[in-house]
Image (tube, rainbow, N blue to C red; front, top):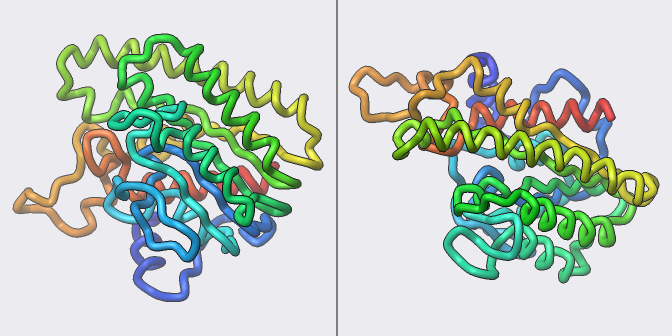
Length: 281
């Protein structure tokens, strides 16, 4: 893991960027990378030649869509993710604005940016925010995801559509400091496991309904990818620069940037797994 952290620092210290991965990333053509999601995928309100989305990058460095974009050398990159996005139209802070389904509707309304051949569209669901907002019925989350998949599958021509499952954040530092943390953690883990089972079934259902030559719908196990990335790291507390003995390389040993969001080291590992996933399917 320290080696990966060293590589990350080296990669983003020089231009042009050349990323080292175990496979050849150019075996996966990427004319355009499109991302929808919540705070895990928000790369900040970046300046774009087309448009700008997002609120802020919730990490101490680049996040997985940025790494993936560089690893695959995509011709175009559009990130619609907003921190706080729920699975439907709404956000944790706003009604009927910046939710995952709202993001998708914004994207499909912009025909010049429509995903075509060799495009990769990744849907990182906002179901976690639904749960944090008090949603107890997984049916509404799955229905929102189903609607999002329907919209996207109708607007992708010979591209790849990836649906990620929910990462289990029951071990995040945020729950450690929450009131009734242990009870919430157990309920949270059960809810995520149930939803992830339904997400896998949903992908299989859509794969049967849509011919692969039109849209290649795939399921990426984000939960397992994050677990593998976080396991060797300190996940009990977020990284802090406030300790007098802190050294610059110490950040490479931490899983969380804040109470809920992972460090750039974890994001890098997620992107690497996505590259392998794309090459192997």
